[in-house]
Length: 206
Image (cartoon, rainbow, N blue to C red; front, side, top):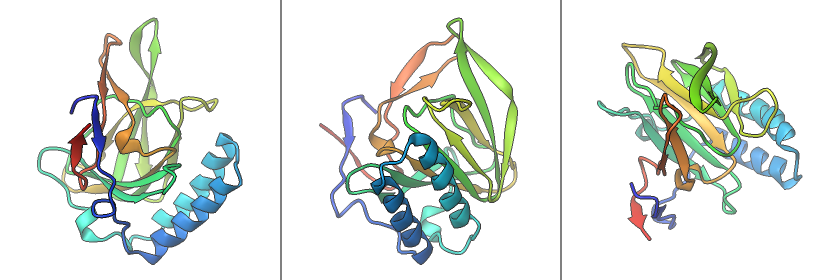
């Protein structure tokens, strides 16, 4: 996908998932952002909202939890009209993982089904270095990423903790994450720019 690629966000393509639980979450998260909180408050209070959402696994339609045999998928569930935040379901087939990547905006990750490992990285002396051991994120656990917040990291790799089943997590980002230019990282610290898009939206060239 070229750097000039954008997403067609017409009403025909971006449709919110019909779910009472998700609608309540979106309403409460919108109210939180309406109050213009600090990023720390967004991560703390928004994390609690996401924890309540992923506590129940009875609301995500199956079409937004479908794995792919080759690659993980990311489905847009909700895009704030002002693009202040997006809600995405990430679906991991057995053993699937991301490359090492960043986000450039704050993010919250809540595990809905299965479990995931998250490995944080940092650029040290121009090279990519793992920070500590991978974190096991089990169902109901919420983790935050941020390029700004103290004690958090923005570069990580995520993989399905299971080799024999699908895992699903719900992510909330402080932007339309599918349209944000971000970076993949290699061991020597070099980067490759990318725009992720969404599995349920059609990318168009601008």
